[in-house]
Image (tube, rainbow, N blue to C red; front, side, top):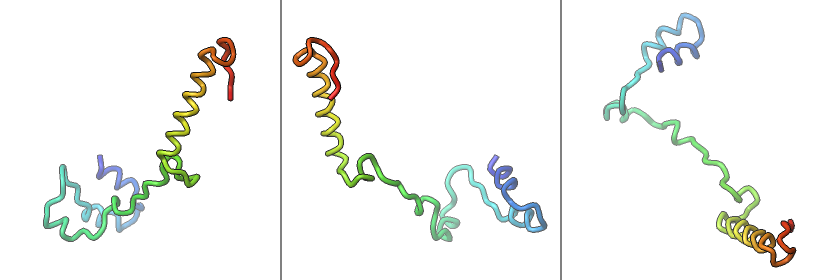
Length: 90
């Protein structure tokens, strides 16, 4: 499957077969002598991106506390203490 996918992405010219000959696909992990020649992998370039709250500069724990407080307030309001059982939005 991998060979067919890579073959489909390569340009359809005279260099295609040479590039396919150089492709090495291992069923598990590459042997140590092969990995000794690898300088970088695709995992070295992954950017995890911002997590919840980081895009606004907030700490994740601070965001979770705010959500927890808002949930508690909504539960108190809907329990009937402030509106006779009606659901009020804050």
